Image 1: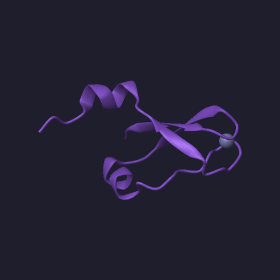
Image 2 (image 1 turned 45 degrees about the vertical axis):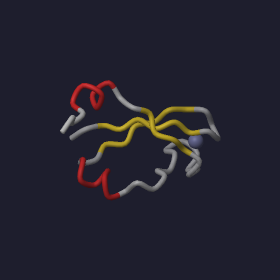
Image 3 (image 1 turned 30 degrees about the horizontal axis):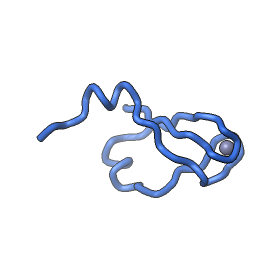
Image 4 (image 1 turned 90 degrees about the horizontal axis):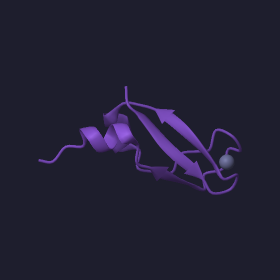
Length: 56
Ligand SMILES: [Zn+2]
């Protein structure tokens, strides 16, 4: 299962969320920070995803 990296703008920390690609595509909403429970987060592109991104 891929791991998605997020960055929290409130506590300035990164955290990872593990979920299926289908789940991720469904949930384009913000993910809550695991550290401070803020939803003021943005996604980071992971190495894994960059390598496996679909080009079609
Ligand atoms: Zn946070």
